[in-house]
Length: 169
Ligand code: GNR
Ligand code: NI
Image (cartoon, rainbow, N blue to C red; front, top):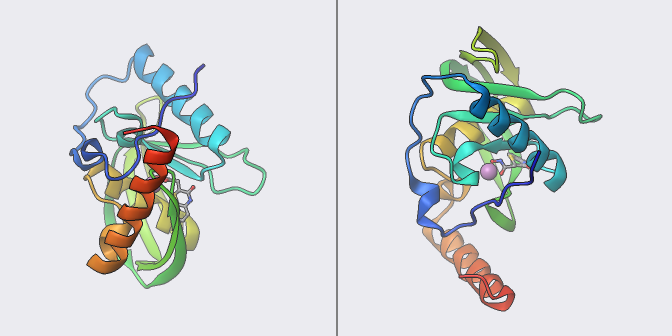
C-alpha cells in the first residue's frame, strides 16, 4: 500500500473531468486501497481519484467516528436530492480553508462497489454533503467554487503563498 500525493488548488489538474471506469481489475483494487490508506493517513473523511491525479470516476469515503466503515463508489450518479444541509466544509486539496456551504441534505446515489456490484445509497447530512463534495471533484469542481469570487481569490492568494514558503510550485 502507498500514500498518494494530493493535488492542491490552484492546480489545473483538479479541473479535469474524470472518465467512467470500464474495468474493475486488480490495478483498480490497488488504487482503491491506496486511496483509502491516503484518506485515513491524512485524516480526511473522503477522497476522489481526481485529487490523486487519476482522472477516473472513483471515490472513497468514511464518515464514521471509529474510521472503520470504508465506502467505495465507482461511477457514482445522484438519482435524487432534496432538502438542505449546511456544513463548514474543508478539502484536502484546499488546505487550511473552511467555509459553510449549503447543499441538498438528502440524496440517493447509485454506482458500483469495489467488486463491480450495483449499489444504491441513501445519504443524509454529513454523508450526503461528503458524497456531493467528492462527485464535484470528479467533475472538476471544488467547494470554493460556491463562494464569492472575493473569498475564492483570498484563499488562492493564501495557498499560493504557502506553496512558495514550502518551495512547492
Ligand atoms: O476531509 C474532508 N472533510 C470534509 C468536510 C466537509 C465536507 C467535505 C469534506 S471532504 C474532505 C476530504 C476531501 O477533500 N475530499 O475531497
Ligand atoms: Ni475535497
